[in-house]
Image 1: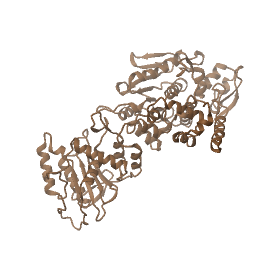
Image 2: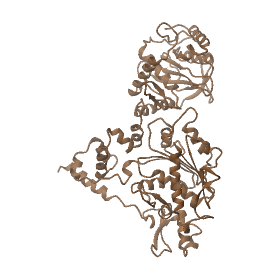
Image 3: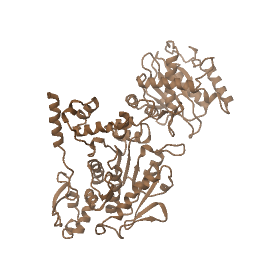
Image 4: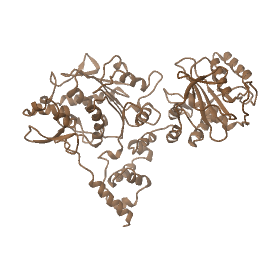
Length: 607
């Protein structure tokens, strides 16, 4: 046996021996610094480890001679003890009803929840999950604990993609309440989960005054005007976005009713479902520390059931694939975990399918489940170049940029003497509910094009043309490329033709397509060519992006079954198309060198 394999085997024995069994929740975790050894009035278990908060509770001296009172007090302070004593669930793998004992991933999430609660903070969590370890169960029972042992009149909502899923989660409540030990119940009535005012969506926990509401993205009526303190938002990555409602709308409606105070809870959990959706965006925001929630990811190797001892450890160590070697060196997996992964992988046609179900990292979870046309890793690299812009507006004659925090124009770089620029205009609608209009400015010097400015908003099309000319004039009389479809077609094509004609008369450096007609005409063929130029630009990192919104749109762009390109439902592609058109024009058009502008007299340079 060579030295390298022997080293792996020795290290594997060390990793295996370092595994500690989960503590007995009835006896308590003796290794926790937040617990202290105490004497219990229980002859079967006289010595236990209880939370420090229980020892400091003013009621503690009064319960030392009453076992049931002592247990009720411990239930209030010790979630794991309460689960093992009062909470009945259906075991995922055994199919039996049994008391709830937390596994290692559940204890990991509990530590985050309890850190907020014990420090008097609102409890906030976003959880990215692997499969089958009970993340939803943990969140739901934690909410039930807050309602059963801590807070009265503390209402909760369970919301998922479809109502049946929410109802299934609420079924955990029913089983819990039905099997709750009567002698440990802290309520004005016996424990019961009963309908509330004949509503099919709402149940009440008798004796506690706490209501439990189920809802879904399909039916948002249950949340209107409601008073919630706890929210469990389940499988958020699968919530669809439509023209009438989006995941963000529902989350705002739910969370807007929850006060920012201790013992309130918002827990958003999901397996991954590609990139660019609401859950992915919220995960990115919170994982960077910019959101209100703690971001927690549970990889497959944290789950105890995903282990399979190898028949020949040495043979396994000698045959590790590059990915398995990464599991060993970077993630600290033992050989029984790698062996399980190898055998499980045989069930899937591709490694991507396996990674979608059993991700090793958060990035892997999102990218393996996506079907988008832009590589998320490349978009992530583009995003690293994004910067906070100056906000303001140009003077009407396009001679100066004036900063204004309320301005619609964003500027990352001022025009440089002698530099060549391209301005692209994607025309949207006039009203707030319509598509956005975008004017993008890209520095087009030889090398890597760079986004330097942008305007995004709604306005009349003639005013949009004026803004575009002003920005093009300001950026060294840039080549101005106007998307012409919205102006050439429709009921107001006469007005559109007038605007195009005025552009042709008033601004001389204007893009004209074959035949001399003003503007870039977007049809299926030209759109595919422009998007292909953008796909290449992103893949090769062939341009510099400055706007995070553009990166967001790249992640929500897809190719449909008929081969056409479009934003996902509820998403936009206006900023994206401004980049696509610019890169296509830059790739397909010969551009002469631009001389520095020495006066403000418009002059025809080309086109």
